[in-house]
Structure formats: structure tokens, C-alpha cells
Amino acid sequence: MPSLLTHPAPAIALGLAFGLRRVPPRLLIAALFFSLVPDFDGIGFRFGISYASWLGHRGFTHSLSFALLCGALGAWMAPALKASRLLSGTLIFLAVVAHIALDALTNGGLGVAIFWPFSDARYFFPWQPIQVSPISPKVFFMTERGLRVILSELRWVWLPLLLVALACRAVIGKTRAAR
Image 1 (spheres, one colour):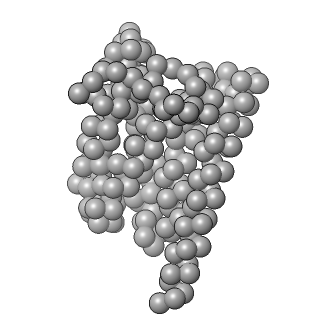
Image 2 (cartoon, rainbow, N blue to C red):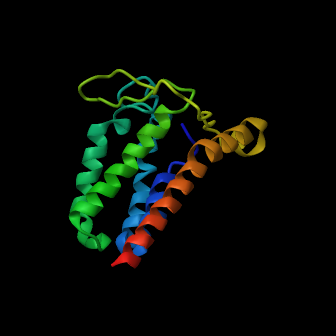
């Protein structure tokens, strides 16, 4: 998986691209939270749940079905998030889908159960440029491996998302100026 520092990057990029007028702060915070929710399955390790189980890491919480459920929850929460149901549901759905995609782009683990409950198979994308992050904070922050992960995430996630967000921001700004 990418690190917990990087999973929120797509939601941050969407907030930057569209601005706080279009993406209210409460909705952005909810999207940041939901970008991390799939990894709550890691608690299963403490209860002896096998990594390969549908309840294990990168199991059902890394499926499109789970992303749809989260999106539906986001739509239901829309009034509290100060946004439309469509925007809330879509942004939260995308935050979870981005998590799934980032995990499928890493070079380690068992893959993600994208199509659960229809299939327990785990998948990676054919191209896996992101270095898988160690689970241990000590290994992540205190070793050369952690540094390689951070540099990989900067190169393959943060920089491209920043460039796309800034490009979107520029296009939106020109569109507003043309009105």
C-alpha cells in the first residue's frame, strides 16, 4: 500500500483543483477521512484474520462495492457536509476508489479484491511503479526503505496530482474569467 500520508492525496488534489467554493471544507475533510477508511481493515491482523481473507487487508474494504457503499453514505451525509448529495456521494466514492487504485499500483502485497463480493480474486494493475509502504512506523520513518517509499510516492502520486490539480485550477479560472 502507499503510506497513510499519500492515500489522501487524490482528495487533496480535487480540493485544490476545484477550490473551497465548490468543495466545502466539511466535505473535503470527510473525503480525506474516507480516503483512509479502507485501511481500517488492518485491525484484522490483531484478531488473527488472515491477510488473504475477504475480511483481511485489501479484502472487501478495497472493493468497488465498498466504495459504492461509502459513496451512498456520503450522499446521505450531504446536508451535514454542506454540499449536494451528488457532490458528496461522488467525492467520497472517488476518495475510496482512489485508495483502491493506489494500492493496485504498488509493487507488494496480495493485490486488492476489487470485485468482491462477486470474486475473491486479488488484482494489481499491470504497471506497479509505487513502492509498497512498510506497515511499521519505525521502518517507515527510520530506514532507507521508508525514504524510498516517500520518494516513490512523491514521483508517482503527489507530483502528477499536483500538476493535474493546478492545470484544472487554471482552466477553471479561465472559464470564470470568460463569463
